[in-house]
Length: 301
Image (cartoon, rainbow, N blue to C red):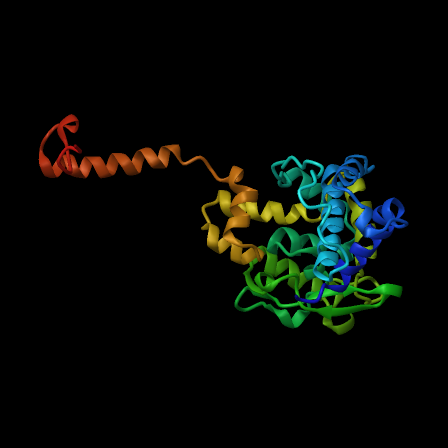
């Protein structure tokens, strides 16, 4: 089993300490029952998506306990989890993008460029170094991310998954914006493009604080930086970029991209009519018979 990233391990530990331990910390594993796990999950004072993740964490831990021979069966197996209704993603509008740009500190504006112009995740944006940008070929390479550790320590580490390793094509406006940022602000520690006024890389907590201030000033209290990736995906797909290509640029699988963004694909009704019309017209020209009598093969029996 691959080693869990440090950030994921911290998140899981925090979740366990806050929600699992208070409810079941004094109980023996063998005494847990599916019904009480369902009741606990339904009563978690969390958003349903978050409560679902907490329940999954408990189930995963109990599954490991079965594998280690600590209990005979997983009491969370088959337990109902808080239902998560998939809400369609909503990309930023042009007006919202302009408001975010106007509200962002000068040194932080490049984060919007990397999110909205290249579809980078937050840790990929904070971990991007100048040597990963090819200004002549108009592309950047994603092969690492900034990992925030305890006590404010940070390091560059591998990206989220194998799919996250990728080369992203850059529009001319994005190349120009990146060049302008480097000209005005230089690079920070280890050559990072996004850095604070002191040159220090931007840790996860610091990024979150600046982002929340920016979105509040922009009048978008619920906006997430991850919504910038949704905006890139919607722009690519609604403009006719193929699903495999868009998935590669964003570090997704085509299946994930389609399941998340299919509702953003343009309706191809007119195009479908034109294609069928052209195909049938060619047949009519060859056969010289009326449309109602065209038959490419004998009738099915």
